[in-house]
Length: 197
Image (cartoon, rainbow, N blue to C red):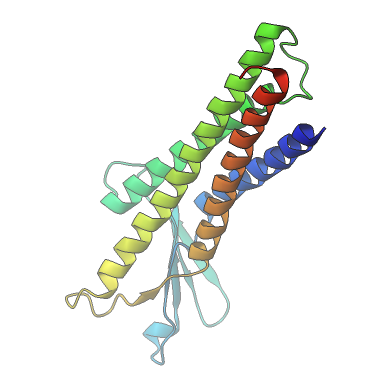
């Protein structure tokens, strides 16, 4: 019974982490400008992977999507988009494999099926761990680019701050790694209780 509870906890955490990856991908606030005292600095600018927005002092917001999907975009956007899309796809496949490997799912009840369920859970947990690493790499690379631009003396007008994306990135990356550990630990417990070791 303890393994079933651990499996359900890991599954819920995996689903939350995957939803967080999607929210992080869709968020338009990957980069924000710092609010200053001049008229130009009072226009709030924030960029995401998919669009750029401006928020005026009147409260109006104007957003524009990028013209291209991959070709013609800056390197940082192409890399971060590719990593986050891979993370979401790997997370989806990992969730499917973990779901098939759970004890409460009635697919493959034979002796060979139990081994396949344990392997499915293990591979799903590994894919979820890789997915969390891809999300962390994407956000960290984008933040590194912002820091490089911030300290570049040739670009004095591009002073930006790191918004709440860093907090979300840390939270969902840790949640992904924790759920990966839960899936791996659950697979080890299943092997011990089913007599595979």
